[in-house]
Image (tube, rainbow, N blue to C red; front, side, top):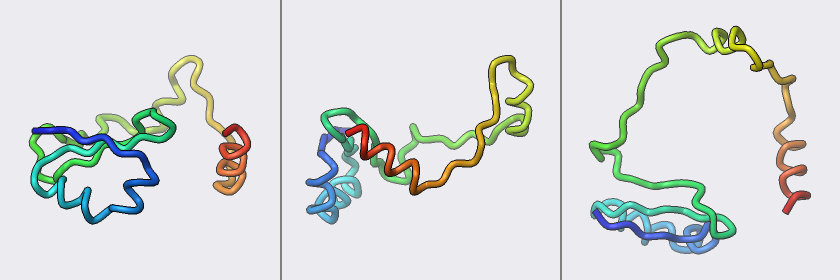
Length: 85
């Protein structure tokens, strides 16, 4: 399997082209500011496996040092991310 790297802006412009590459079996790695952020694979790729959790998420709170966050607004998160860039 071959791998193609593409930045987010180019992927948005030529999404159909890159989805065609994925259909043909290529892996597409999406980058943002030269850092890989996502990987697009065929759905029937044998290396991709979703594993169901063996315990409930609430058990994470029993781990020392893990604290529950307060709920955060999606808008606030996006705005703070944009301010950092």
